[in-house]
Length: 116
Image 1: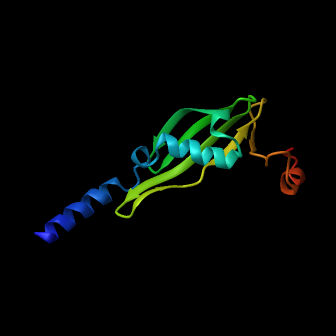
Image 2 (image 1 turned 135 degrees about the vertical axis):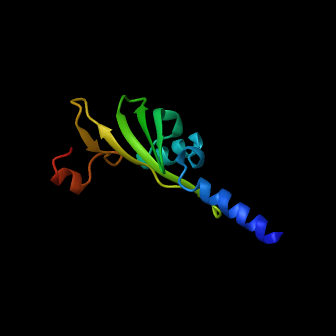
């Protein structure tokens, strides 16, 4: 009887592995994005969420008018829920994508690449 329960739990857990739509909550997106962009969660809005396998893609608009395309990875296993850190790229006014700069300016690598 214990073997059947174990196998049932294993099948259920393995069936949910890779489901970003289940693993990645709206709260997780907000927390990871706030950290990645060094903003308070009240200073931006999230829209256009798309779950694709283990990846959740979404757009962010800050109160200052900056726009970002972001993504996180997420999955659920028998060990629990896992959500990666957010990766965000700023979308420029001309439509070109730029890596998100550090708060307060650019770092040496961004300056050398002509991104700021």
